[in-house]
Length: 224
Image 1: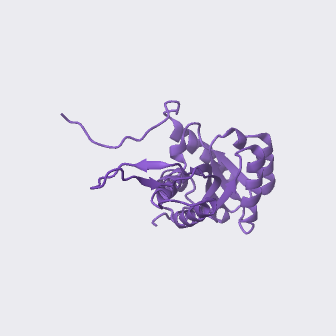
Image 2: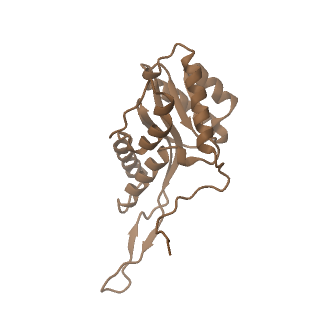
Image 3: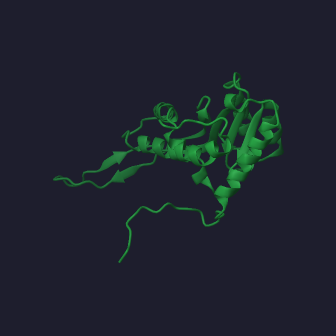
C-alpha cells in the first residue's frame, strides 16, 4: 500500500514553513555586518544557548516477574534543577544552574559567557525568542560585551542543536536509577553535559546547512 513506518518529527503548527530561510537570512545579515567591521570571525566563539529543567518524579514501572507485587522504582524524589546551557561549537561550553529564567538571570549569563571567552574576538550566541532574551537591556549588555545575538525564528527549536544535547542528558538521567539528592543530580548533569558538549555531532547538520554555506571563509569542520 506504499506506506512507511517511521517515528514522526513533531513540529509546532505555528512554525512558519519558511523558518529555515528566515534563519539563514538572519545569519547572513550577521555575516554582512561582521564583514564590515574589524572582528576576525575565525577568532569568535560560536554557541547555542538554551534553558532546561531536569526533574525527578516517582516512576513506578511494570516488570515481568515470577513474584507478585514487585515494583521497580526510578528517581523517587521530586527534586529539580533549572540550568542554562551554552553549547559551543567554537569556544567553551558552559552549564550554569539558575533559579528563574528572567531578564536578570540572562544578564548574568551574558557576563559569565564573556568571562570565559576573554581571549576571543567576540561571541556569536544563537538562542530562541524567550521574552527575557529579547529585551532592550539584553541587547545593550550584549553590545557592550561584544556578544552578537542571533535569535531563532519563533517556534523553531529544531534549529537549535542544544535541544538534542538536552535529550541525551535526560536519557542519561533516566538510566541512573534512583538519584538520592540534588547534589547527585547536579553531578550527573555536569558529567553528562561535559561529555556531550565535547562533540560537534549534535550540531553537524546545522553547521553543514547554515554556518559553512554563509561563513565560507571561516568554516567549521564537524567530522566528530
